[in-house]
Image (cartoon, rainbow, N blue to C red; front, side, top):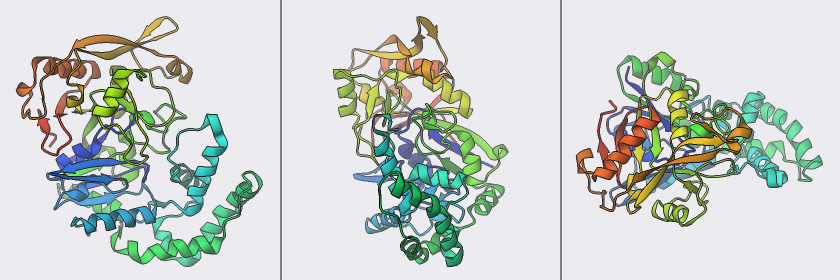
Length: 427
């Protein structure tokens, strides 16, 4: 039962798309298990760049079946638009499977998301405004709309009425907005039913049968560990579980079937949105990382906040996910620095702390304790093996591996599909 989980070990945007795509040619299924179109993956194939938001990266690998699991929240218009865009570029999307139990992002979820974030003002979370949080809230409050509901107009109408009973009160009386008509929402959602029907399936059954047949299944997380609703930098987090445990609930596969958990680490650290970020840089180094690394959000279009590598976060990700391997991305971006700082611990109230503090207050006040590692000037983008890397680059990778608590089994040395050094096979 070769089931692998691949997830972000920082705040997201680590290059999961590149890693998933690299493995896509060797796996039978690639599964998104949480999040929605608030996530983004950039995959470069030859001279073609693909920006994926909702679709699993495996959709670019011929022979691989991409799956959107029950734990994902789906905006039908975004999904259909993304499929259409890939079809126009000659990508076969016919094998996609969509869980009938996945929840639908409705127009009123998007409206509530946007007006709530504006209302928060300085206290805003940094949401993408795409309705993700309100949709997960509806799911937990048991007033959510699922994909399967699109195929029973009576049930769909009842559920939309139930959801809007409260939301319209909030929109009109708190936010001074116009009430949303039930019939209008139902009509829009029903309009997606026929277009989505070819993809809808019992994905839990499909995936478990695949594992029983010794097929290789890769579970792909969106966002990153530090954005996990339970284990991230709450409240500046997403509304789902990108950590490894989320793969089990978000795809309907038991934990005993997971054989390997791969964490994606950027060779430095980035984050989008509000929230604490101990190693964030506000100087020329931060601007250089942003410029050289092309650090702009695939989904949001916002510049990413940039900082040096944080080994405290990496160790935390290893622990809460049970990581067996790391995939280190964007090592090439660090070429040209004479010395590269790495955060090995925090200073909090004058004390050295080597593990992530559970207290939000302590983490907010954490100051990075840096260790300086020698840099390199050689171009590493053509390196095909670890031995091809400059000695200082090798030392940097080994230091990060030792600090992070799991072996680094692959290294990204450029944005291209073939610009990866594989040290240990993930399969």
